[in-house]
Length: 373
Image (cartoon, rainbow, N blue to C red):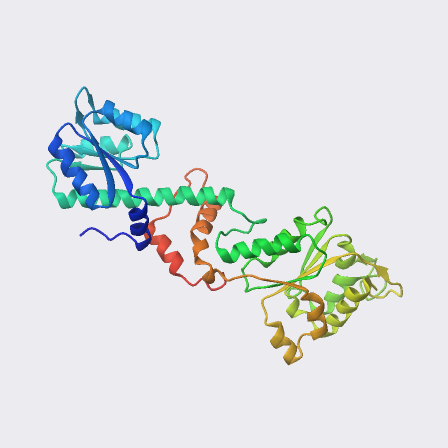
């Protein structure tokens, strides 16, 4: 039984048929192979010699060559070598009357993707051609995805061509040119810090510091000194003064990741710093002017946190001047193929890189819900 094409591949083959060139000196074989190819949804052309085949290949877009091993004034192996050298993207299937293991190994070693033994059964030929067509389509899709990966619109390390991500890119482009605070909302793993970095490095502050701080990772008692700094002798162990992140990011951007985890008492001090554009280091009596853009991010429902008293509403209003909401991966599954290619290129072994991923594996990856993104 011939495995069915995927719906997407079937539609694509119907809209843009795959082109196959049949090379055989027997007219009956050419006609039979052309009929079977057309039943597989392909557009078939047929010639009798290797010279004619090479002429067609120079002027036509061919995806698959189905050639006899024995040809007049030449042979299929020579044609295979020339196709492989001139058009390495074309898949070659060999027709052979010998069918020995040695001949099969030889033609596949030289670059043929498959072979069919003469005399062949119609169902066997159809099955082989369908299998090769799916492999060719997969390679073409991978090449297209790699091209999209090289030319994709986007920012920083963000990857995606879906409409949802296009809207994110446009928002980044828009807000990066302004000074307003930005609140980035999204589940863990959706790329909130990548968006923050993209906003900073696309804007007028790109040559100034970008200072990220994970509010959920800091010890409660140390958050204030990390943000505002401290002076020598402010507390036990403060042997020398230390600049806080708000001052260290002077002229640049402070990224407050997981702002929803910031203690309420510190939220009030942060609000005052944003309103007055000045800070007072721990243990100091002097206030220092700051010029910092604030970008905050959270995976929490801040409206619910406000209702429960865990987050200050006035700070929310101060931060939520511009909001960027990131979609989870399950809501932009059309981006999964290009993400897969990106990670294959990033992590595959240089000595033996993985070039493609099977249709079944891609289908499973797209079907998965990706908790944690």
